[in-house]
Structure formats: structure tokens, C-alpha cells
Image (cartoon, rainbow, N blue to C red; front, side):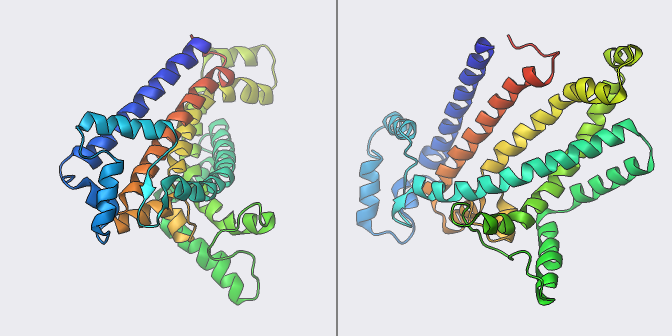
Length: 321
């Protein structure tokens, strides 16, 4: 187990190193990066700021010295400095992370619960009315763009209820959990549903397909022949084996969403990492873009390492060496 985790950690470090190399090439020495200091400072920055950036980033030195300085700062938790807002990039990222994590923490259990339960039922009762209904709803939500579903939920559960005097949900904005837990929860219900209903469609289809494969395995038939109850066969044996591809998908989804739920945050006016990334791109605020790319990449790497480690606990057939 420890050997496996060490290998996965080493591979994760290698991936992060490759990400830093790609980011450095794109923003520092690639085509269009002739005046790096001017690009990082912004179009309206005075010459003194441009000169300060060039001096801080050692832009007058060879590229390998610049890259070494870039890596050294990252290893010390320094994502750079945002000259648009005159504050460190880590401060801007730290402001957006709690909002993005709040979305994931609420939406992930919902889509897992809906997706796994409906997929299990469909696998146990194939071609039944509910199986066809779940498949139809899954395809419908899977085909629905997130911004369309978000706007529909705002129209139906915020606008229509509010004009009739029932103010259950706010239309936009974010209340920190530490400030008011109830308002935090109330303000995130619609974004949670938006993310969860779209994502649950994938998990319904994935669980159904995986469970159908597992229920046909010899060891499941043997368990039934020994007289085990159907509930125990499904939950104790079949589901654990079927969770492997679901865990893989879950790790990818969560890791990706940590980098920002861009569309959902835009629709509901939540200034998370996705919202921040979009506005940084519009302003050509390169230091913030670089910082978010690094954070998002690290989140994907960490999520995949955690998922790989969980395989042995979920599926007894898997052995980590």
C-alpha cells in the first residue's frame, strides 16, 4: 500500500512539474510572450511597474534562471502578484476557493445519491417502466446545458415564487458559512441542484452499466446460490465491485470542479474560482490566470491519487502493490 501510494505521489509530482513547464513556456517564452513584463502588468500599467515586474521575475536573466525562480516561488506557496488589484494572487484564489468548495460539498452528495440509487434500481429491474423513465430523465438532463437548467431553476423557483410572495431562495450572491449558516445553505440550493441534476445523469448511466456487468459475474451467482438475501448480494457484493468506475468519474469531476464551476458561478453570481477565471481572462489578468491553472491542476492530481488509494477499500478484488 505504501509503495503504491509512493509511486502515485511521484507520478503526481511529475505531472505537476510538466504543468509548470507548459505554463512557463506559454506565458514566459512561447510565441506572443516577447514582452512578458508588459503582459503581466496589464495594458495601462506605467513603465515603473513594468520595470519592477521585470526585476522581480528576473526577466533579464536566461530562461532557466527565470524558470528556477518561478518554481521556487511556487514551492513556497507564492502564486505571483496581481498588479490589476495590487494584491497577491494567493489572496484572490483564497477568496474564491470557499465558494467553489461550497458548491462541490453540497452538489457532490446529491448527484452521487441520485445517480447511484437510480442506476442500481435500473440494473436490478432492466427494461421496466422506472428503468426506462430513469434513462429518459438521465438523457434529458445530460443533454441540457448547465446555463439553461440554471436559468430555468431561477425562473421557476426564484422569480415565480418571489412574485407570489414566497421568497424561498435568493436569486444570486453568496453568504459565507461562518457568517450565517442558514443563508449559506439557502443561497446554494439552486446552484447545487443545477450541478447535481446534470452530473447525476452521468452517474445513473455509469452505475446501471457497471451494475449490469457485475450482476452477471460468477461470484454473484455463487452468493445467491449460497442463500444470501438479494439485498446483501446487491449492497455487499455487487455494488462494491461496481463502484470502481464511479469512483474514477467522481475523482475526475471533483478535481475538475475545484478549478471552478464556471457556468454555474456565472449564472448565479457566485464569485468562486470559475467566476474569477472568466473575469481575469476578460481583463487579460495573466497572474491570476496562471495561479488558477496551477491550483486547478493540483486539485485534479490530488483527487486522482485519493481515488486510486480508495480502490482497495471499495473493491475487495483490487490489491495495491
